[in-house]
Length: 167
Image (spheres, helix red, strand yellow):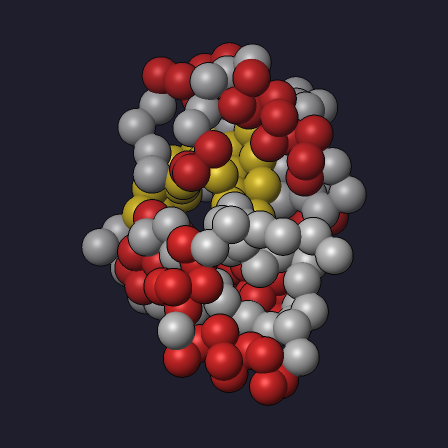
């Protein structure tokens, strides 16, 4: 499937990622339909792609919004969701495209799956973070000793239904 994308951010990160974006376009997995930014340049096209005002995004047909800004990622996501009513599940970080051998179809299926990672340490959180996914695991920021973790896994359903007791 070819995913139609809007890119938010046309500065240094975009310039660094332009070849990666072209790679996904050549693979037929991505088609950039428009670009936007907080500060728009006076011209209307970059690399053959139309630049639009952020307000115009709501009138476009697209599958994902790729944020090309690490420093202001959270603020951009908040603005996109709260001001422009872009569904959070459509927003991804440019960093996703840097994952070696990434298949966008598989990534989008995984993102939509609402997976809960059961891990005995921070590994699950790192995976969520790397994939830019919402943390849906009850094991967030939790460390479980190895023997207890194996015991938990052997009877997961039972332990997940137990009431919490604090010691």
